Length: 151
Image (tube, rainbow, N blue to C red):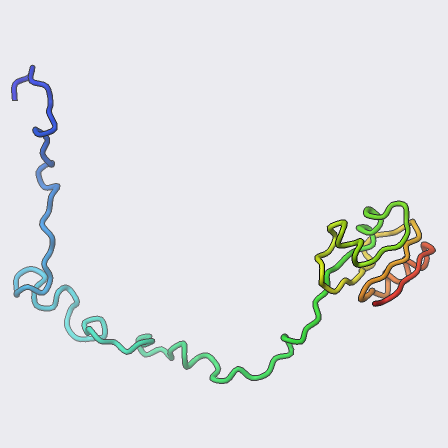
């Protein structure tokens, strides 16, 4: 190409050695032929290995228990938790606290059981209705002049 001739797309060619031909495994005894790069004998040279075979290690389906059995975890009671300091923030003027008012203020999710815990202090009198209370929460609410009723 002369130096004044502009470069054109049809003049471009790949760099020498950039385009290598694909290795054709298993096509005769030349390069990568007979065993196709798998070596001789052993599990990795075979085409069919049993499903779940782990090289002689006890397979996963044999390590896990066969039968499910019984678990009490299905019958566990989970509560939405509200602490006293949170109640003090949400109801600074005092008054009645029900599950519905807590849901409306975004403290708990609806259709869930609610438990009041005694973390923090409370200074206003609250009449709290919930599904469960800790012992310290009952004491602190009563000390502040409020009342507790379980649903």
